[in-house]
Every structure is written in C-alpha cells, then in structure tokens.
Image (tube, rainbow, N blue to C red; front, side, top):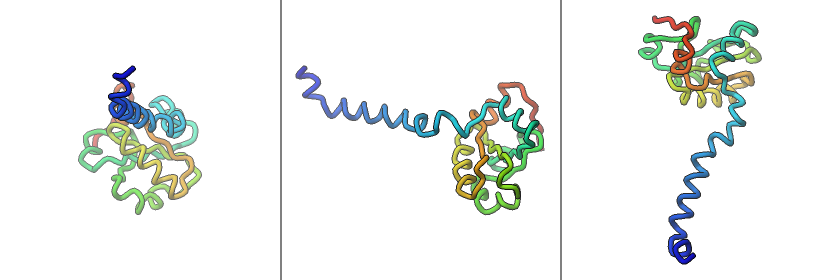
Length: 136
C-alpha cells in the first residue's frame, strides 16, 4: 500500500493519460458522424451524397473516390458553400486516413451542413474494401 501512496503522482498521470486517450472515442457519439465504406456507398447511391475530398491536390491526384470533388481542408470553410449548395443534402468528407475529414465535419456542421459525415479510415479504408478509385 505504501508503494501506491509513494507513487500517487505516477498513478494520477497514468489515469489521466488513459482518460485522454479514450476521450475522442467517447465524445464522438460512438462514431455518429463517421461512416464505413459500405455506408458511404449506400449514401451515395440512395441519397446522392456529395463526396468532398479534403486532401491536398497532389494526394487527390494519386487516387480518390469516383466523382469526388477536391477541396483542401484549408479552403473548406471559404469554398464549401460554392461546392455544395444544398445544406440539407448528405455530404461525405474524405481524406487519406480519416483524421482531417473528422475536423472537416466539424467545419461543415458549423457552416450549417447538418448531414455531414466522415469516411472512417479515409481512403485507406476505401481501398481496403476494394472499392473503385480514380486518378486525376
């Protein structure tokens, strides 16, 4: 018991870091705005979702989802309204790994796109699911 008392700082740091690691998963609502590749295909086919790739032009040219529009993350806030005019239509934001697109969903929702989603795992997940990719 004295070991725990003598090292309480180490235990509190370990506990805090564990909570901080789990926090993104807990606050995302269980992936409420994140979709897997199959769900994205269904949304594209059934509801004519617009796919916006937030990668840089060089990454986009190496391969992207068929019909995706390239709008780098740095330009998203200024140009999303010109790219996707209907704010009620579904929008799927995509990047290489899914990290930038999660931030892009927050920007889109701030702009009024309540039906904005992120492709979980990004283009890596899309390719792993053997779905078609086009190159510019």
